[in-house]
Image 1: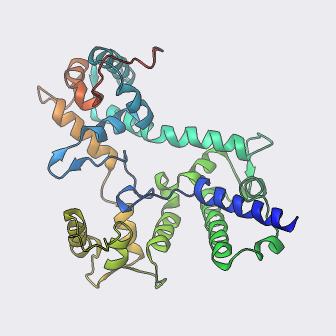
Image 2: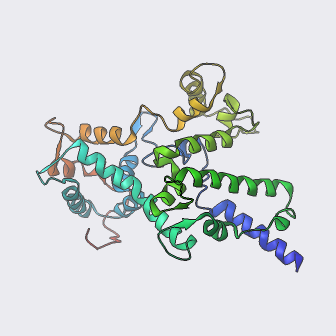
Image 3: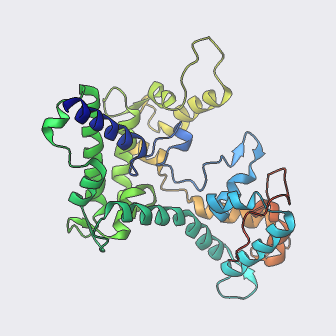
Length: 326
């Protein structure tokens, strides 16, 4: 009986570690969840422009996948329908402000959909508030202390770390400090990188993840180690790693003391002087604005459909997965 209970506890820990919604572990720094990026794609690969980044930013990643299987004609048709939505004042033009609002909507759509799914799974009463006790019970099963002490020390410490971090996130997400989370606050809890009030907890989590020796700062070795594992067969370091070393020395470590402190980590993952959404809107307009009036007609957007939604698949026309209208 004890063996069965222990096995069940270990299984639960594995589920929590790899499927817990509040924790997203990625392969390297360039895909770290804390970075407010519009896509997991890189916008430029070397000097080559990667339009998949623009597709994800404009459509949202899930919708972009759907467009990959559409013919050019179908893509243009659906793109025109999207343009009509973006043009809020119906004056026949898409302005930078309208395009920014649309991209922001797409950026947050996944967050809200994901939050709604977890709200249903972790709020058994399905009311408009969630308590920490409800979240704790549905995420960690209210594990008793006597069960935790049976675990190996490293697993017990990992588990304690997850609970501690979730509690810190919970407190930051609880905007009105009433001890429970609304749906909007719960979305901030699950996706803190998109909420200004969550900045501090996001930066602290990142520092803790990358700072392996626990000295409260990130060295060059820790920074590179978060992205790249040295090849034991002696292969030469990839060029992008060399570039990241230069980035650390020239831009990340602003006071050039050999480390990134808490403030420098914040500027790395959540830069205060760069607006990803504004930059993407300006980029799309610049590349599509034929008459250079700093706004786009529907025709200008459709003429550049490959930039906005054009499929990169090789099976154009073979599969039309969806036939529903917007």
